[in-house]
Amino acid sequence: MGSIVLFGPPGAGKGTQAQRIMEHTGLPQVSTGDMLRAAVKAGTQVGLEAKRYMDEGALVPDEVILALIEERIQEPDAVDGVMFDGFPRTVPQAEALSELADISHVLAIEVPDERIVERICGRLTCGTCGTVFHDTFNPVPADGCSCGQFEEKRRVDDNEETVLNRLDAYHRQTSPLAAWYLERGLFHRVDGDRDIAAITADLLALLE
Ligand code: AMP
Figure 1 (cartoon, rainbow, N blue to C red):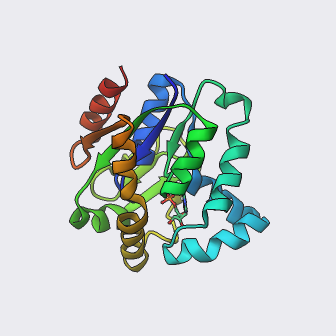
Figure 2 (figure 1 turned 90 degrees about the horizontal axis):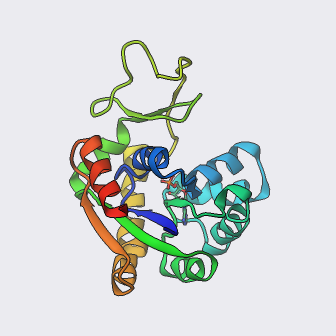
């Protein structure tokens, strides 16, 4: 198996499924969104440039993203492949990626638009361990997160206005990638509007 791309609209559950697939395959999750948020927090040049796009729900320019990815996939844990989450998001990013890594599966998690806003607006993570939760669909257990040190964290861009822009960017810039990967025989779809465990089972079956 090479690297995997987790594909889908914002709020489809890519990060949630990446964590679960990682437990089975050992492939590290490479989330460009997480990398950018870390850069913003650290106040680096990349973070300063990326922040204005992220705050609006627009895509960060391809060259910024590709520089991050090129560096990340040279890390020792990436030698046997990685699981890309939220990357590639444009056809030029996919073209560049095809020169950098061997992609064996593109797994599309499909969720209808009308479900996205409620999924994103109730989303939170544990700031200590990164586990993803949702106020309604995947609540934090009464005794807290399994890491034992639950710290509630919500993304600044998980608000209704920004979500609509992110969804628009997805339809205009990212969804054309489906046809691009379909032509290359790499594209597989799962229904993402179901139970978390059922989706994981389907994704793992596709990887077998
Ligand atoms: P995410 O965590 O994947 O939802 O990404 C959060 C934000 O980071 C997006 O709304 C974009 O502004 C930016 N971003 C993340 N990944 C990419 C990418 N591959 N290309 C362009 N912008 C990205």
